[in-house]
Length: 378
Figure (cartoon, rainbow, N blue to C red):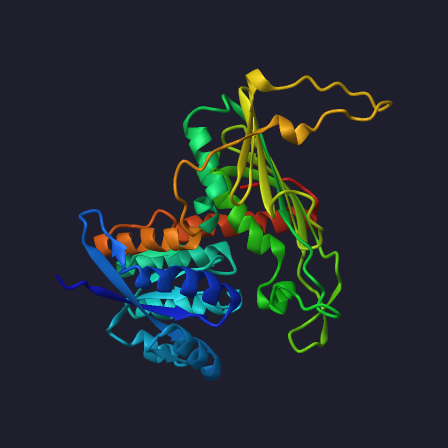
């Protein structure tokens, strides 16, 4: 039986995220496994059409991975009737225009977040996509991480009792680029190019909080630029005009209080680059990218504050590791497969442009809170 193929335009295929997570670890991995299996046992294959600004980079990537089609002409790719899906991993400031063009071309749309630079623009894209009858989705990769999947399992099983609070720590030291090359592209630190940790990470925190604990109702935040000068990919210094750290308090509709620190100016002293501690009346958990540890009410020790004596117990050893109990695929690939199944079925993708707009709304509220020094109600 022949396997139908979905042509996928990958715009931004030469970028860090576009290449590593979306091309290699998602689309090509799906292609190499023989496509996506549907609920009825049938399979649908994918075939990428790479789009970017550098012909040399595209050619090299295509040859390396056995991809037959690439182009620097986005309009030409959108007019190709063998492609039905458009994916965007470009720089944030270029995304909205390209997504609008893809909707006009009748393509189903999947995009990195944020899908636009303003919440109103993201809402407008959602309405355009709905009117065009195309399936639209935005990357919500952290929901598919093994650590958060384990946390979801604990929540669904009632492990926490009544959840009281969430505390998140995210970040690492991003080299300035002068004597060691930076791990992130320079545009991330220029506000005029759509950079900034609030716009980047608050969109993530919104969908994590919304899908695990409840929608955000109010935010109090402080965004700062700790490192004022950085060096770009050509080794030239430039002023960092975007926030590189943010400290937020999020009030959820469920009554839960979440506190999340996000920083590219912090050296890591935790087990993983992101960790969430959830405390409830019956138990607590600390979830990271892959691991999740728990401490139940019945096994909670009795710490006593005494600054005059050294600690004689290892607090970390008092927690229990949550077993995998399943095989966890790459989070980006898992959502790609979910999105592709929705396209084939012609049904809405749960993580759509409207969900993305709520993330941008939270980022805007966080920036307003920081600028005006007040609590902002959403």
